[in-house]
Length: 119
Image (cartoon, rainbow, N blue to C red):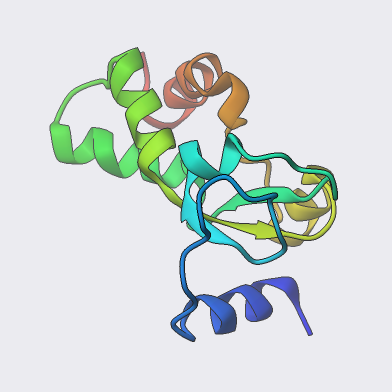
């Protein structure tokens, strides 16, 4: 079963959000800031679906001007994400593109933004 099909099926099945403070577990769903703060002993990957880049672009279009650093971080932190098996490279292989890294999203968004909408 393809990872994207598995995630879509799981997300549409009414899964409860992850409980705060527990270890990160496969297919947890919740806000990025909360899930990223959890212990990750299984070395799982937090996936933005849709991608963080697409969420940032949509927010910038909605706003009508460039996002500030605090706005970029707010989009990242408030985005609903899910936890998937494997590492980030495997996720990028399945997606077919490299998303903005949430750990360096301001700098990466600035570079990607120029490619998407210009300076």
